[in-house]
Structures are given as structure tokens and as C-alpha cells.
Length: 462
Image (cartoon, rainbow, N blue to C red):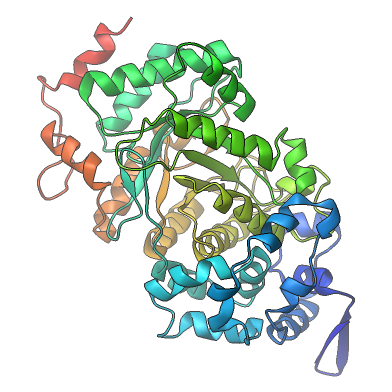
């Protein structure tokens, strides 16, 4: 039992699970699940009580039973007690103060990451204002490598997302070339396929790899089919030109089962992709996407609030050393994040919590057309995440995904953020852009001349 008094009223919270849920900032998903605070006063009381909880309680009181959930087993069995030692005596509130203080520099946060559990970082994030989430995340640096280096200071990468409603190769190539000419694609060129078939996945991978080899582009590609589809084409002879393995993940075993995956399946995919040895700079071969509300939508949240479930998904991601982790923050819809304010808060939480756990976090700054949000909200979140040091964002033609039917960020949004914050693409990709005359030496986009080799590729492609 946890308790705290606000004014003349004493609030009681039956267990740690309830306390975390009541302390969460207001969001429609928690209200839908029936776990949200009943009023602002109860939320404040929960935050005050949560601030006093020792961090060790999260190791002693699993929120989802160890016996029934492999994500809980992963979290507890992989906990690094030595890394945890510097903060082991602190409460959640004291951890917040420590994270905002001078001792929590980039090196200290990197060393601490294996000692933090998702529940700890979810808890401390609930005590933070937006500026705290930005300040702490900005101090975290997580570097990953495949053919480009992601996460360096002063850099902002993009996922070039050239989706097409019928997987038309020429439509996809047109979007890819549009993005490359606007300096997008250094995180990954990733296609959400309209068809999840092995044949379609293999065709799209070949399309992107042919382009990469034709112009010696330092890039990695991905077709976001189900992980089992990707495994099937890796078993074929010859193996498909697969760079990164993609999968959506969640924070409970039951939710991941709903996605058709387990930790064992992800391990099989990691081993298969690394065996190809396609990376030139590193072997971070996994790409994961997450989103607040996914466990609730699958009725697999075990009574947890959606943000704590989301943080638990990051434990799954951390296990497999991914190149990229992407919170698709507003994609599930207003049932889980109602409006622009809730989407902004969730995006900052996800980015900060992922970085504290040692993950290379990006954010798909997005909303669905029936949400109470607009592109001005996305501009604000885009800018805040840029200040917070986000590793990558999305580059979607016109910010409007015509296949998935949602609104995201565009190639020119990435150019805006790089310009106003003095950020540049990944160094390997930047050097290639400069060789082709797409970027000037000072990092500015240039208008491609008629002799630009990329302009002729679409006309020559079959």
C-alpha cells in the first residue's frame, strides 16, 4: 500500500502497478483501460508517493509476474547490479534530481543504462516536466553502425519511407530519389510493403539494393514485413539482400504473442541477419518499432499504464542491439493519445526512456487523421526532439503516407530541423551527398544540375 495526503484528503494506492498508473500524465489510453487517475489531485498525490519509492522496489516487486512473462524474466535476469550500484540507494525522486544534476554526464548515463530497468525509467519520467525529459535525453548518446554511423553529436539521421499502396516499383523509386535529393535516407530506406509475401519482400529488397550498388550509396535498406517472412527469404538460395531485420515489439509476452513473435524468434532473426555480414561499419542489424497503446489494444497490458508497457518494450529491443528503435508515437490513434498535447508528451517520454536504457531512439512524429492534432503540433514536437538529441526521424513524401494513411514528417521537415539546429546527416552519407553535389561543403542543400546521375535513374529503371 502506498499513500500520500494532498490538502485534507489522503489517497491510497494498492500496489506499485496502481501507483505508476495514477502518476501518469493524462492520456486517453489509460482512461480507456480504467487505470488513470480520477482527477488532477489524485495524480499529484500519486506523483508525490512515487517520488518516495526506493528504486530497489522495482527489482523486488515485478509488475508482471516472473512466472508468466518472458519480458519480466528478461528484465530481471539481465539486470546489471554493478551498473546499478551508483543509484541503488536512491528513491525515484532522488533519481530524477541525480539525472538532472552535473554528475549525470554522457559517460555516467551510458555506464548506468544496464543497471536501469524499464519500470525505473518509466517511474522517473512521470515526475519530469517536458523540459526535464529534453535535458536528460540530450545528455544520452547511443551510437550504432551498419553502413552509416547513427547517433553522433551534431547529427540527425532520417528514415526515408517511400511507401506505395500497390508496391509499384517505379512509384517507390520516385519517392526514394526524391528523398535522396533532399538528403534523406541515412538511417534507413525502409518500405512498409502492401503485401507481406516473401516474393514481394524479396523484390523490394532487390530494388533498393540495386540502387545502392549502382550509385555506391552508404545506406541500409529494410522492408518492414513480418520477421517470419524475412526469415523465410533468408533461408532461400541465394539469400535475399537483406540489411536490417524489422519487427514491431511490445512490453509483455502476451502482446508480443499477438504480434506473432517471441524472444526466441527475434534471436533467430538476429543470428540469421548477422551471418550475412553485410554491414561495413558494424553489425547492428535489427530495426524495432514500438508505440504506446499496443499492449492495451491487444488486451495484454496486465493492468499496467500504457507508458510503463512501452518502456518494457525497450528491454526487448535492448537485448538485440538494434541499429534503430522507432516510437511511432501517434500512429495508433486518439483512443490512446487523444490530441497534440498528449502526443507531444508521449514522444518526449519515449525518447528519454529509450535513451536512458541505452537505445538508439528515433521517433515517427505523427498522427492519424481522426486525432485532435495537426501539423503545427508535429512541428513543435519535431523541434523539441531535435533539441533533445533524437537519433532519427521520418522522411515521408509530403509528410503524408499514402499507403498507411497517416501524417508524419517530410524530407523538408528534416532539412528545416538540420538548418535551425545546425545538424548534419550521418558522416558517411554526408560525404556521399557532397560527392554528388546534393549538399555543399557547409551542409546546405543544393539544386541538382541536369547532369546529376540520380535524375536519370528512374527513366532507366525497368
